[in-house]
Length: 255
Image (cartoon, rainbow, N blue to C red; front, side, top):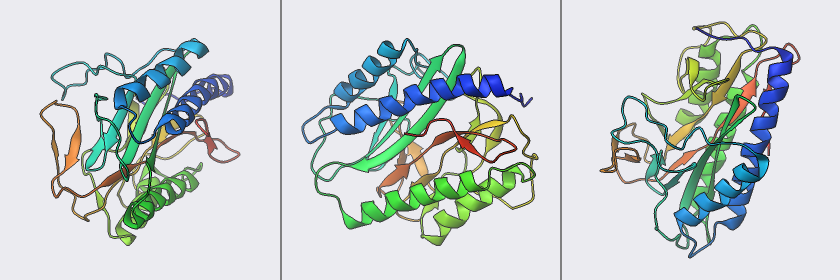
């Protein structure tokens, strides 16, 4: 069931989203050659603690996971697409890093992700990240009252496929509200004019995930969480929490 949020609830979700935005900004600023992923997780923890927020990631265990998630960020490096567990790995020159973070504040959730490079970027990585950001922008632009979920999916998929990038079939965006994951699912590829109609008060986490090699195949790493490209190519992940309003889409996790 899809819950329509009141305008007051959307304002509360904006406050949660701003905590997520501050955490991601702080993590990206701290990311440098030699910094460990665990240290980046500590940076995000500090921002959440200062805001009086909790993490919907920490201890989260969906049906596919063999263990609860042990951190407040997902840190996915190079060929890791999403759900990377922060470890003692220290960032190297040229790494492509995707950070996903959430916050729970006042009973409401926010969820967002960014991708960036550390040190000297590879031109191909710059293009990949730009395409992910363009796909996210296209999905947000389609998130208007009167459109359908398929219009968002089609907008994202058009950018991804147009750039020659692969898309994960089984993972995409989702509704968000009191819980981090709610109905409806928001695919990253689909047919326009299909699916649930968008209404004022719906709040969605829109999140393109691009595979540089152009194939859609991926696998789970031995940790049971990290999803990696089968061909070893790099990946990028971007995400915003977006409210559907009569005045147009409102990005609640804007940084």
